[in-house]
Image: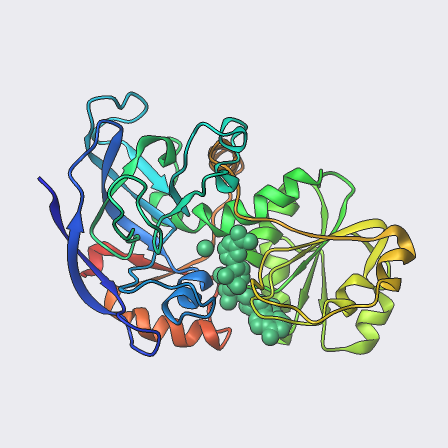
Length: 349
Ligand code: NAP
Ligand code: ZN
């Protein structure tokens, strides 16, 4: 029998989120049913609610940083059992047959991965609905184990902010001796600082907000640059091997490109929209590269959780109750979050 879920979502780009009830499908053989305890609030949730990317399907019930407890499993599930603490990130399905899926890059599935919300279920054509809800039903392959002993109240943001920053840092070999700059101290950026520092890099926070400097150092940054200060930016020219840019809106990348040293690379993970052009001279000089990175695959997501468990790395979470979600969105837009809102379902839906 399908089950009734309670959650919060929105019917239109100009409407606030409100309580909603909707159906979760009956368990398929390879499905896991999860009672959600926590859901992180990603800037992407806000972009999707407000149709910033012009691809939103309503009602949008956001949430792709999900932690909870398994309440039931389908007959074919072997990796998870009732009572396990588990986590779900940005994807809930993919074809599992193409080369990308076989390589553990389900995010780039040749037939298209299915997003945790605002996606279309491959079997029944229904609109997927995310973690701002009491429970969820997810294909087993897309459910991660939360390692034993982790503080489950602080795990949720790892499932998007964590993996989106871990993946490029790992892909490009950030480690001992790498000089890393992280641009934007928000949900993604603060994980970027913590993870890069834990990997052994020398980390510099590059921020527009002077008051975040002390926080950045507490999070593990060794140095801080105020990007609005031309003198500080000039003094840092050609300093970095790798820059992780998390700015959530279109912007001129030139000032940041100029901070890269020889064969340095900047990876953009934030702005998902057309960007202003830049002069290729800034790439030619110093053999610089610019690229992007999308979340990460499932094996890498599990590796990230295991890494965080081993090193004791957690996001900084501001716990809220679900009815505070609209206020949290307004604060997110004003850069007023330190550094991830997490909805605690126990505080009431
Ligand atoms: P967030 O918490 O709002 O943080 C973004 C930070 O960027 C802010 O705290 C601010 O840091 C800085 N910033 C904001 N506006 C800026 C501007 N106009 N110019 C320069 N800096 C600015 O957002 P988030 O949750 O980390 O998400 C960041 C972006 O990543 C979003 O666009 C989201 O959709 C995207 N995202 C992408 C992926 C992916 O797969 N690539 C995955 C998840 C999210 P300072 O105050 O330090 O300057
Ligand atoms: Zn996200």
